[in-house]
Structures are given as C-alpha cells and as structure tokens.
Length: 77
Image (cartoon, rainbow, N blue to C red; front, side, top):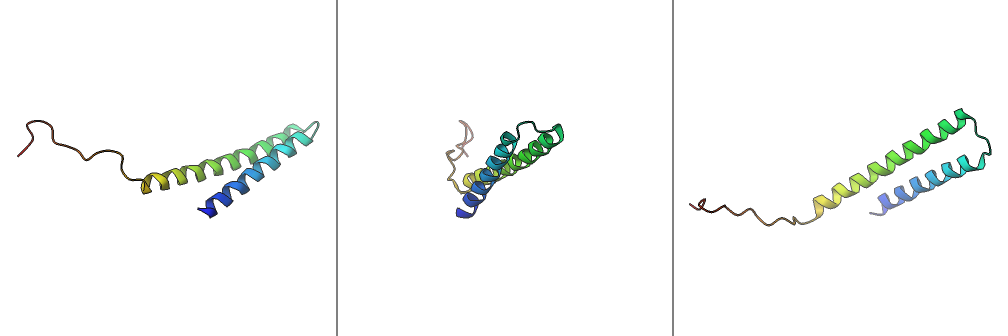
C-alpha cells in the first residue's frame, strides 16, 4: 500500500515540522503554543485513523485464526 505509506510519511514530516516550529521559538506566546499543539493533535488523529484503517484492512484480509466451531458433547444429531 504505497499510498498509505506515503500519507504516513507526509503526516510524520508535518508532525516533525510542528515540533521544530515549537522548539525554534525561544519564548512562544501561549496563543502560538496552543495553535501549534492543536495542529499537532490534528496530525496525531490523522495518523491514528490511518493506522486503524490499515489494521482493519489487515484483519479483514488475514485468514481466520480460530478453528471452526465444533459441537459440544451431546449435540451431535
């Protein structure tokens, strides 16, 4: 899934840029710090959604690890 991988890399780069922006400012105002932290939160949520959709896709494509249900004793017809 190169598209999801590319999207993940883009989001990671955006997050790193926000971290640098936060660290570069020697005395960020509360407003600026809050703005950057909110942007970081948005990126984190997007990364989480990407991971969750990938996990869901993987679990749908994976063969079932549970053996077929067997009738309990006395349930045979």
